[in-house]
Image (cartoon, rainbow, N blue to C red):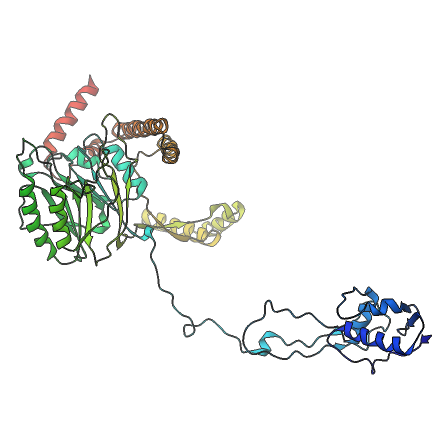
Length: 543
């Protein structure tokens, strides 16, 4: 039995699921017809499709079937196809009703691709646009990184005289803002060692032992923009050395201490140190600003059961101070170098111990203690440069522009005016063809004798250091030590070549300037010595 024109556009209901519609039609056909084959015409000469009774029974809601492509296209053209619900990508808030699509009646009726005109509203029509203004922006709190805080290092040098080259290289490589040295063994007249230990852009404060006695000594090497100065203390100590450093704003009181261990030579007793240190802590606690107490106390903090450590820790606890070093700072596994701050100040952010500083010929027993102070780093010195892109200048345009100016040369009575006019013409031509641009850059603190050989040796040392830190083997440590010695050798050779060339090509006045730089002479105390030295050099050259 054939059903011709049994399905009309007006009689087909718009249901949510197409399968339910087909199942309903199948039940009606089963009850009315007893035939085994049903044919449906979709008003197209080539679109007649036949279904059996069993096939219609399978088109129930509980059975999922994939309809033919031409049937899906026809159902879509009628506008009764159910779209899947997609939750992804929708914004929260009020739901706006969606306008149903409209079938384009002007399109070809038998076109295989139906045309549907959608009425989906644009996002701008649903809500008013929002723009980023100062009224609707919420300012987030700023958390400074460790790179923006003061980088401070504490180290017991045990004689600075033979470690100046490696010390300067270490400070520049790690960008140390404040270097605190104990047991420098320096005197007030050691100008050469002080000059060699001061990198470009840094200042040196030397606090030697009273009466220039041998041994001991404290030194502070800091970046010049910090503008640190030595605070005069009324507390005179006998059993330990101290130095109090502060800035102009009195924000920080950096107190460095070196306590020599008791020995038969100095006849120092631990009880005398405890009594004197207790009074010293009371005096520095009343100073304005935050307190940072560092140094080599020669107290084994890792042995809390010892009597001297118990007495020392009682003073620290009563002053509400906190210890930040928790790793051994000595090669024998003891914590001798300490960093103390007031518990409520939150002054020290992190504290680490670095074992990579290895000097040749002399075994370094103390490790470097690194920590960040919760104060902003000094801004690097910047220089402004004027640049021109000379590569964009066309030679013919440049010649034509200059020839036009030179065709009408004014008459000048003074020869200097001619040079001024010429400079103005050339500058105006360059501004026209290659405009000047300004660029600001920061000045890097680097030694003037830094060359490619030093750069490559430092790269090799860093590679050996990473390998040793990863493996911790004795062979890798020896390779790192040799790489460190190679860096010092290359720096020494580069430094000799630099000053040798500079003295060879210098005039008499420049020779004095170079000698002042080598001897770290900033006054007129050594003029006679330099004159004698220059005379001796001139005599040797003449011979």
